[in-house]
Image 1 (spheres, rainbow, N blue to C red):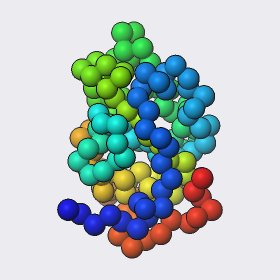
Image 2: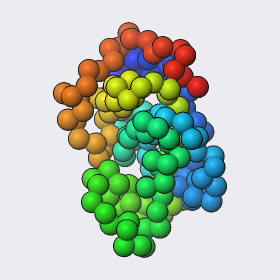
Image 3: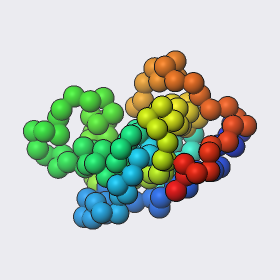
Length: 151
């Protein structure tokens, strides 16, 4: 089993919520920057158990709205690899069987890019490309996040 990085322990994850619950009340999603994960399991994110990881540089609520569209509408078929993967999972498992969790992170866009790339590297999601690993430096196993950026 992989060692859990020090920075990962610092993250203050939201409660796990299924897409159906979040779609009924999107106000539970913070209007704050951060990263999010989609999963098929109602549990904390861990390596190999995550579908997709993304980031919102300005607003999690606004960004996640793109993934919460009605899966029957034509707009739902827009080509964004991560979105398509999440919509496919929602179709296969229903909105009751796909879960979201997020972490608020008040860093600048580069800080959030680094956190997202590090989450992708550590959690190994099914749908993310690993290109970010080469574009952004990764947090090391012993690295710590600036506490003032965490909410």
